[in-house]
Image (cartoon, rainbow, N blue to C red):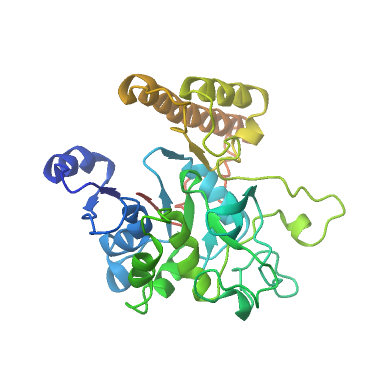
Amino acid sequence: MRVVEPNADLATLHMLGAPYDETYSVAPPLPGHPPTMSHALTPLLAFEALGGAKHSNFSWILVGDDDTVWSLPAVLRLLNERGLRAEDPHLISDYQYHCVQEQHGCSGPVAVDPRCAPCPPGVAYCPCRLPPGCTQRGWNYSACPNKLRVAPYGGAGVIFSRGMLLLLTRDPHHYLPLAMDTVVPEAPAGDVVLADAPRLLGYGFTRLQPAAEAAGSPAPRPGRRFFASHCQFNDLRSPQTHFQDLKALAASDPAAFRTMVSVHVRQRYGDQYYNLMRDYLPPYRRLVELLLRVEEREEAKRKAAAGPGQGTRDDHGRGGTAPPTSKASVARG
């Protein structure tokens, strides 16, 4: 589902997107609010477009910018290898910014939300529950053990579980009024709402470290990320250079390449104007093709290793013909 500008030709977009199960929604401009409000409202609009609490049957909603490329096989591996349940309230991104003041004092990218309470004994991965002092409105975190506010990088993408969306929409006075109060001209970042709406209800970003690290391995890898793991904030590389770097990674270390769940393509490209059709879309398409080729090559290797008559195992530990355990829907602001 894509959230588009009010002057978009919805009839044509629906016709062109129908073969790919794409739907479109309009976020009208709100007087006094910046255009980034549409990004803040994307989870809400996607949830309703998929049927809301009564009629939807999705498991996960993937929210990204219009230039976020998702690797769905990598997303499913990330979720299923950790046994994350869509019914639980999960907010997932390890491309975070930790800020001590509004619009200032931010550090990132950071992979781990330090506010999360430990998981129950014997549980490696669980929803991130926050201490009560971290759930106050705005920048009132004086009672929070970690004096900071956490927000995702929208270009890297954020994943919401069905359980989280049900929680966020249970009270109609929660999400929309928060977005109206938060996304204003002096603080236009829509990404903040994606994290603050769960935070006010007591939830942060689910930790994604491998089980050994979560259990206190003596050799943790705290710098490892899965979301836009080879992108920097407003990266100055051209889209073509960015693609070539990822292509080299796919050739030299396909295992690392396949852990990457998202890529932010159209980043800040200096101060010069570049043509969208000429400079951005070709590398975008080549990147999608590269992701597909790498997955197909690895699948062929698995089949060859299994031998004739042995069947294959997919990335989720099941027989290759089994249906996926999770249904992921992609929403773009």
